[in-house]
Image (cartoon, rainbow, N blue to C red):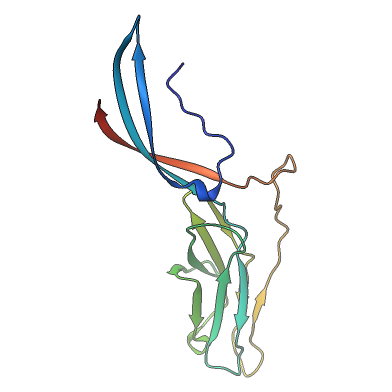
Length: 167
């Protein structure tokens, strides 16, 4: 009655192009419109997991980021020095660090995003390589995996209206 369309029980495989016919009535049918829209359904991203490959005995340390849940996920990295003098960002699931070029300690986070959510990994601290003393250390923080009411929201939707004209 108010012109709103409510879609319930949407699932990821419901994504697609749909058309709605809108009829305007008085005593009789006065006019009809057809409106097309694209329904995009996304699963929110889970907290990223970072795997560490390499140490001070190798030329590089590689950080690899992945998520267990999420659709249309993009990844980027945030690098922050412990002295807070630098803050850089890098795109992609992997970050290769040439620890021989590092002059101070840094903390790295992997950030996973999609159109309906984002999540940040636990921080990874890269210690300097002095002889064989340096390494990457994953720190763990407690982050809830469920909403405060105990439920996990499985999907979200976004719509893009594409007018098709008047019939």
